[in-house]
Structure formats: structure tokens, C-alpha cells
Picture 1 (tube, rainbow, N blue to C red):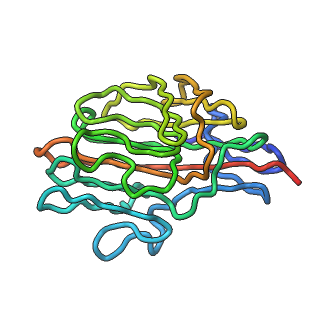
Picture 2 (tube, one colour):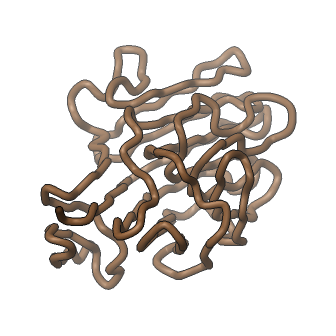
Length: 246
């Protein structure tokens, strides 16, 4: 059960999910920048079952079937990857409003569930704009230029938290992927350290290869085999940053 509480920080009203003070689920104030998608909002889904504005949604169809990205009645988003290796979707919100800056706390988090912890690719975080954040052919791999993100690759359940600047990475062994609902979150107090959390538990931090460019809320999910449909549900997704008061 959600236990939402409020606090004031840097002149902004923050809503957070107790006892996790870093899990900011909304914020209000003149110094607030945020991306908090409402998957069920009117106009988010097209007649063909894909997301429209304010998203850039790139679907990869390696096989003959259809990959779909569909908001559900319970407020979640369902990505269904067809039965083909590399089938899936790359989703980013339009605009890149976030950047690691001194005196500008930044939070990003999402609650995600997949049906296959091994034969899938998964990525979530803040990344530079790119229609293919993970490989669409050849070896399964991430393909990010700049970002702070969680990922796991086909053939393994080991997950990483990564900071990347101009394609140079720093990786933190963050989690073992499963099929239950999981919170993936990170928090930066400034431009020097990014701390990662999985299900509210601190798993490590990065102080090197922190991205120096603008970032946006990003997701990527792909199938890793030619048998069985792969699914990814996204519940809450939040990115919130506070700028210094003038």
C-alpha cells in the first residue's frame, strides 16, 4: 500500500513514498522539472497500438508478428515483444529537460515487471535521445551515448547500473533480475555522485563517467529468443529535478 507523504525542499513541494525519502512521485514549484507519464491519458495510444506524443516510440520487428505498446486499464503500460529475437520497443519522452548539475537534486525511478528474467533485454533510466538504446541485431548489448540507467541483457539475469559519458561507461553490479515487480531508482544530489537503489535498497554509486549532456526518460525492452512472447509492464515512472532558487 502506498504511503505518500510531503516535504519541502529548495522551495518545492515534494511528494514521496515513505519510508523511501528519495522516491519522489511528484513535485510542484517554479524550480521543478519533471517527466511523470500518465499511461492512460487521452492521446497517448494510437489506433495501431503504439504510443504517440509526448513519446518517441520506435518498434523493432525482427519477425513477422507485431510488437505492441499499449496502456492498460489499471494505469500500467504493457510492452509485448513478438516471438523473434530483438523484437521490442524503444521509448523516450519528447524533450531532454534533465542534466546533472551542482545544487540541482535529480531523482529517477520506475516500477517494472517482466515475464522472462533471462531471455530478454531491458533498459530504464535517463538517456540522451536515441531510437535504439539497445542493439537491434548482432550481439545483444546496450548502445547508449550518454545516460544514467539500469540494464540487463539476454542470456543472463545479472543487472547493472551504468553511468555513461560519450560512450564511456562505469558499471555497478546492481541486481539480479527476476519476474516480480521491481523498483529501479537512482538519485543525484549534485553533478559528482549518482546513487542507485533496487526495491528501495542501496546497491552502489558511480562517481565517474557521469553524463554531461541533456537527458530524457527512457525505456527499452526486447525479446532474446525466437520462442515465447515476452512482456514488460511499467507501472509508475518518475523523473524529477529541482533547480536552485534564483
